Length: 546
Image (cartoon, rainbow, N blue to C red; front, side):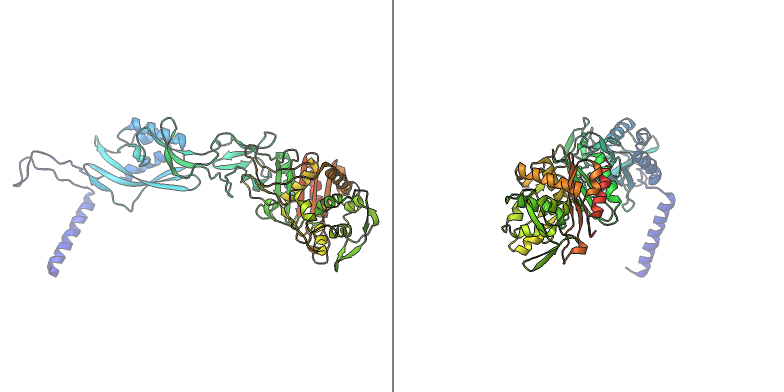
């Protein structure tokens, strides 16, 4: 091809394009009735689109009305208003108005054929994320007016007559109860796909997962998009998402207690260092409250392991009692004690010869270090087993740890373990189970929901009743005449403070108070607090709140 011919073709093509743009039309030329050229027939006429529609002018009102759920207004812009209005009305019974939008895909050229214009449209449905799909819509001219050709596929390409889309898996409607506490009171309501506490201080970090399948953001994660028939019955598999286990309209009945949970959160919020509180109902094992302040990360109260300090003496004392001692047995409480070359000391006091119950109430490290050093290697581990610290539970909706107590082969290791230092670690949940075991005088299996049982992976058997009764007596002494007398004004409180001073970890000890009042057992820990004073103060605030 010569340059001259190429130039002529390009110019001719450009002029043709300009002509089409200026005219703004697509033309399918008809046959001439009087036979304008040889070889053409006049028997049949091809359909004519005298002008292609200004697509956005036709579609925009329909897109806007459809997304707004204005069924009559949108239907009037179709070639079958009755069917369209019925379908759009049905659509918004299963999909929230405002969650569904439509937009023309401008990157794709509309196609003209057989008197219609086909336009690709992208739909976006916002549920827990953005679900997108593309449909091909047709525009046709009816009575000199361009309209959307109505078909179920306008909504979704897989829809057939009588079908629509629905967002399923919602547990409740807006402002309906999402979570009940142990008393049946509403402690969370539905707002969209979130269970929102009626009071932000009701175990806020736990509320996000109390639904069982909840994500860390607080959404149910259980909503999905499906095709349903006219009766609302699902057709086939979900288009987007997966069916959740919980799909009823009944609220989740948790073991939480709104009043106790608020008291717990108010109490921990007063501390500046990482502070956690877990409360359990001994009679049922129900978790009543899980509270943490802003300084504590994640759900530390349920899964982070800490040295329990002298609160572990509850278990050390039980081990001693099982060796034949009683609360009245005489024991030595020197200011310092050398055990296997390791110097153990008290918090600047000595009691000389005293009773076991007094050594417990005053938290005498040297007494319990000496007693533990004479135990067999598995003595403390077996005692810990009986209080649940080595148990393992699968509590629906949450990941938990209780503690870890192993055999101690050396006297030094047993001495350090006995005062909650050494290699002993526990979570606030674990120590709350310890307190609940004493309070209930039985094995306690923690749970979070009334309708979902905890799976016991590794269980435990509580000590015999006489041992637990003696431990109760000693824990009461702590409040009436020991290291937690500040709590004596809050009724019949039982407990054990927890800090253990050793040469290696003295100033970094975590402060604990582990105890119970009535049918509420609890554990409080203040990380790196040096003494148990802050934990006792948090406990006082907690007990004053319910």
